[in-house]
Amino acid sequence: MPNKGERPPLSLVMERYLAYLASVRGMAVRTLAAYRLDIARFAGYCEKQGILAEAATLQEVQRFMADISAEDKAAVTVNRALASVRGFYRWLVRFGYRKDNPTGSIRSLKMPKTLPVFLWVEEMAVFAALPDHAHILWPLRDRALLLAMYSGGLRISELVSLSVGRLEEDLSSARVIGKGDKERYVFFSDETVKALEAYLPTRQEKLRQEKSKDRLFVNQKGECLSVSGVWWIINQYAQRSGLQKHLHPHALRHSFAAHLVNAGCDVRVVQALLGHESIATTQRYTHVNMERLKAVYTKAHPHGIKKSGEGNHIQGIPVGSIPRVQDNMKEKNDNERY
Image (cartoon, rainbow, N blue to C red; front, side, top):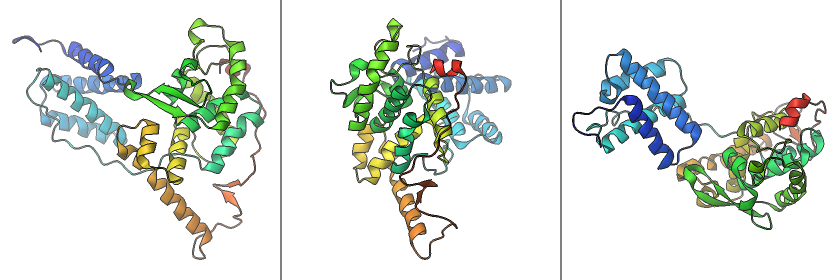
């Protein structure tokens, strides 16, 4: 708590708050960067108004939020900015920098209800088989990577930080560190175990750096695989998949959750497997099942609307078939990076 009469500079106060979020709340690096940007922007706004950010009133905060909304920012961006400023004031109050939180009565924007991007079971089988057919990058690693993300429901940060030492001896499960440095067990299918068994010997041959020796997934130079590297790898296969969906690493985690819920798994069990803090985050996958039921009804019922030439397809992909893939390679440098 600051001494009476002292007013530390805002930059110092903000750094203390961000340090608190990192050390006590265990906030991710990217989230911290977003909070820093939002608070700095709010401070800049207040400076233009001739006031101190830490002494701003409800009206100043409301005008700031109105300015962001007027820029046609997405609701999620506006809400994140509000959460950043609200959390900052909550911290100021808690540690005696001010007596009240001016954001207390401001409501977040209503978020549009959208279903997460995911693959149906048939589509996931097609996507997971791509490394064996595309003949690009590092097929043994890539198949193990895709299956580990999917069957374990892993976040991309959990995947890249996963160490060999956290794998069980039979490779059927692992301990991962999720958001807020919370540890949980994830489980791998028999297919994933076989893929890991095939990949691990080739991984050992490529290891060069001491710091990457315990990382499960490495690039072709034997270095730790990065978040951007995983994005790049999945994008290469997404381009060759023929699936008409905007695929990204988190889509595999969404697929994991949707498939469990569709199979009748209790939502709270899925919550635990995903490491969600709130059950509401997990419950959105229950809507996926309703969407598929609706799609099946539309296709099968006499009053349903069918497109001409529609046959036995799942999301535009013939069941049981593997779409043709392009064999043309990207530049050698890119392939060696990942």
